[in-house]
Length: 378
Image (tube, rainbow, N blue to C red; front, top):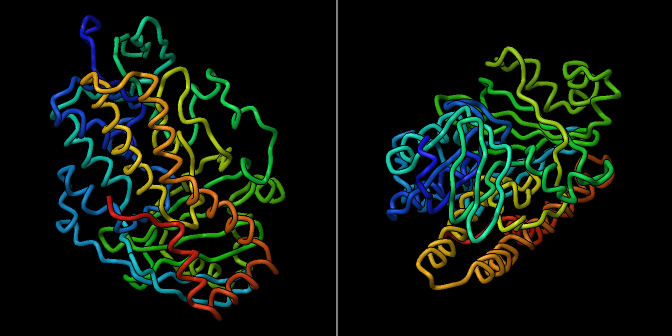
């Protein structure tokens, strides 16, 4: 690492938001550094569904989506805790692709025009006199702009004492996520959301005739099962006949599931000590809305446009931070609120039944609610 080099943009975290931002910055001719604590390729806990609002943007980064042979998804299937199914059209539609494949593809593009430091953990990013000093396991650098693209949570959140980290466990910040890749005859055009007590499980096709199965539930559900995931799946998830069939007949491709704890859907600050938060670091939409991947990439586009204006002296740092916060809230605020509202209705026996029956009985309501969780192409 050349510590004497001053970077225009430093990006902490190499998920979708970070990689997309690095590619945009590098292609525009800026000096970009990206720090990622893992080594590509690697799996992540993620529903791995992307709405079509993101397609043109992803392709503009240099990704040949058509080359993956990924089927389009145009139908949402949801079941209540008893397994009763309702289906709804996804008017915008989407597709499935694993983070293992997509992140690695973007990594290969990013490293062509940006300095990407993998297996590298950032310990601090201090702002002073108009620039940042970033300390990491690979050394230190100086940068004009820093973005936090490190996902759901990080050691830096603790350092910044972000409110969602300091909150007591609640209905918005005490979830666990579990993910598998499986082989299962899921219809290619279908994404399914199956409810169980205090949680829901999504399944959809990805590349290579595989499916992503990912579920979210409360930490209390796991504790009640003796902190044993297999026991919880047998005693809680399998009470839904749809999930019982999947877990009984599918071929599971991981020896052990990928897991993440302490998942929070609470509101998050968008700027911390002059660092712009992008993607999940800025706020998470509930997985049942299926748009976290799109939001991460869209927020990177919003951030880069404003960062470019700042680097070209068109706006001040103060204006950069205010404009980013305003644009982010305008684009994603209502989507997150809708997601939190729907989240409260899923995973309960009575509330899920009433909600799905209402959606099924009045298709216009279903269309409006689904539409509120999606954005326009960007």
